[in-house]
Length: 132
Image 1: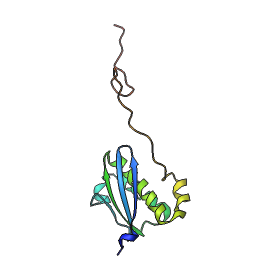
Image 2 (image 1 turned 90 degrees about the vertical axis):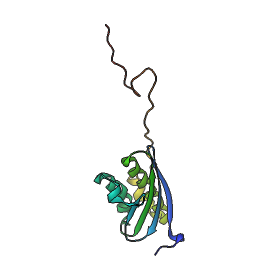
Image 3 (image 1 turned 60 degrees about the horizontal axis):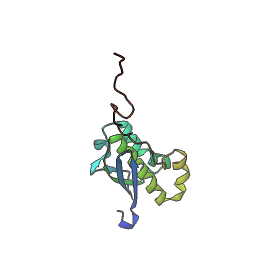
């Protein structure tokens, strides 16, 4: 069983979601908010996003992932967990950097929701215009 010195911690963010991720040597079990990943992620694509960094480095069956995710929606949380796993894999072995970097898993996605402006219906949408 893994000891405290063999845990690797990292944080990931995406949109409004924040994920805290711990990697521990194990058999590939992924736990998100104390639930199995398959039970927590309702969409199969979100589950694949969570696994992407582990699959890219070929360590899917070598590490257990324990993550807590807050804020945003499930897709944002999946992206945050992927970034957290990628950063934790760098702490495990710095040689993972090239494969993760080339796939874009180490880049924090900066896109955020644009704020609603006053005098408008939404961020960019205007109210319907009529001459008469």
